[in-house]
Length: 432
Image 1 (cartoon, helix red, strand yellow):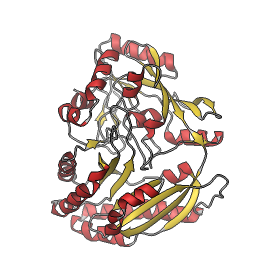
Image 2 (image 1 turned 120 degrees about the vertical axis):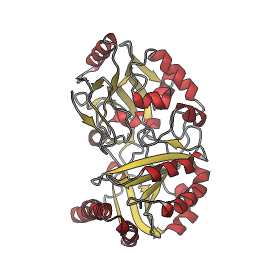
Image 3 (image 1 turned 90 degrees about the vertical axis):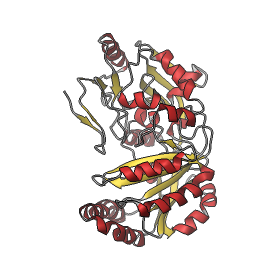
Image 4 (image 1 turned 60 degrees about the horizontal axis):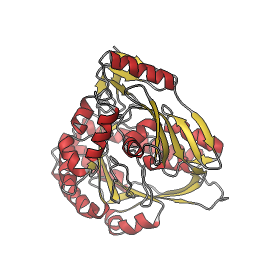
């Protein structure tokens, strides 16, 4: 048995067999063998989901031998990438072609297949998640068939598989609609939380990418505004020294030290939270887009995130602020707030509605269940949809009421995987 755990240590499994294909034919062969033995199969990705979505009950598929860009039409911006490629590798290879993703999240450790399958997103009121940048998908289905889907070819499968939770087949290749490389101007600074909330809609609408972090028990938020610069603009990146001090020393080493201190002495968490909020620093720079989008996260945590109707943000955030001081165990990590445009992907958290995302975190090893359960109750009042790769306790009956196309997804799933080859305990709960 091979012991597998995810990044946060919140899920573990001991698959009986691990398949390591190096091409589409080998993916199909592994699927055929697993099905013939009456077993179940899960692709592993990079293990960066906080849920057990990738946990294999019997067979696992490791796609780290199936990576890199397979083909690129630079003029059209269409790039086909093998499914085991991490976003970090993808960004580097796109950069070499003079291309870039339109929008990204702030972590690049995920595989491209894992990121889209769980609905990974960045922020931007006029932009969708990573899955909205997909032009076509190649999947290997439960019967070993290799199929392609797009808006024109097998459109129902495409609508389901762009955020498919790995429940429809093994994604073997993803064709992305990219664009010419561009620079982002980054402005990060502390601002009074009340001021940020008062101007939230304006800030979200007037910036290409807007988000903020609120440190519980503090009065300030760290606000990030990233905006595109005209072609031909000069790079003005952070110096290596400032980048090291701001991100590695301050945000990872020092912040991690504060968290460990708070974990050892919980009564210090509240004053430490106020302290962290008061010492936030400002910085401005410009750089290649993926270098601005992505931030190294060296401090481990657990996370729950829900998408809510954007117009509900103020009410939900107000309830969350009132709830946090009542917790038995204090919160050591900040709350992150982002936005995204509505899309038409069936299990996308932004399906059919402009959305605000609220992500709550707790330092690994500290109590979080009361916090996460209370948060889920608050967002549930406005139909909150959990990020598929982050922690929640909802089941298929509740999720069906929050996704208008849930039954359509279930129908396609039964068509392409009638025996449930690609399921596991997590999918049994959330999909039925």
